[in-house]
Length: 92
Image (cartoon, rainbow, N blue to C red; front, side, top):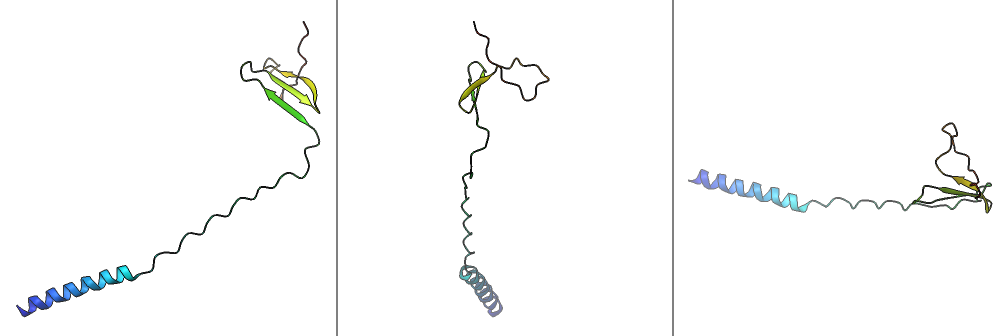
């Protein structure tokens, strides 16, 4: 019986030691926050001012250069044009 009590006491003390050691460890350090992205505006606007305005209902794309209407890209341009050249619409 004494061996049994000694074995149970040793088992309880071993389990208690393991549990105490597991609870006594320090938590891992907090993760380092990610650096915020830095957005730099462009120094100067591009030298050639082109504006392209697509119409989602017709597929027509009106093109302006320095505020002047240059023409439109309708999707009916020849296949060998890459990029397509804007054309003024036919007058009626």
